[in-house]
Length: 165
Image 1: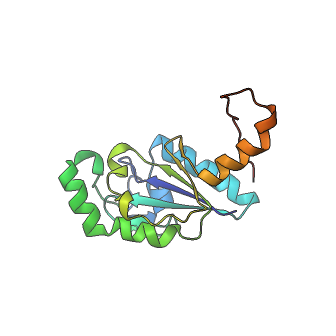
Image 2: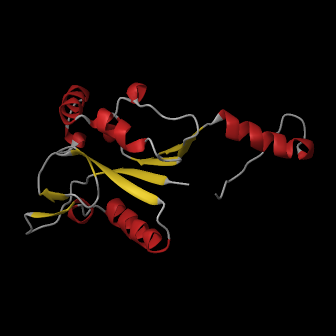
Image 3: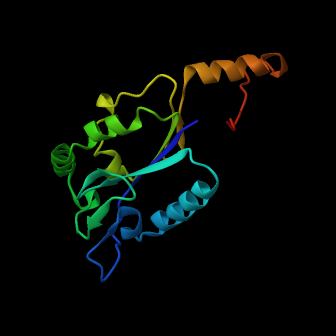
């Protein structure tokens, strides 16, 4: 089971440094917590990857060496976000990155979500998506869980389940 976390760059960046890896460049609170969890998980398992959506660089790997910059989708209008994301090929690059993953977590603010044209994303039918703490329903998984618990449920009740794969 391959997992992918898609996160964003942050306004707060390393100070007094010209260039470093993307994962080390960003210093926002959420990013630092994610980085800690990501690194701890990767010490024990190799099925988790991360990509970062950067308003300055587009879709980047955490290890990519980048120069410091000052661009953010949070300071842009919807039209500017669309223009910048098209210039950086965010949707196309994201499509190329997500193909081999079973579960994809989008940890993005609203303006970073706007940088992705979801109508052009080619999700495979078996992928489970967690989008800002909201799951995207997969009919097959839902039906399987319902069928497994059907005889135990009262009428018009539905199972709550967590899959630990």
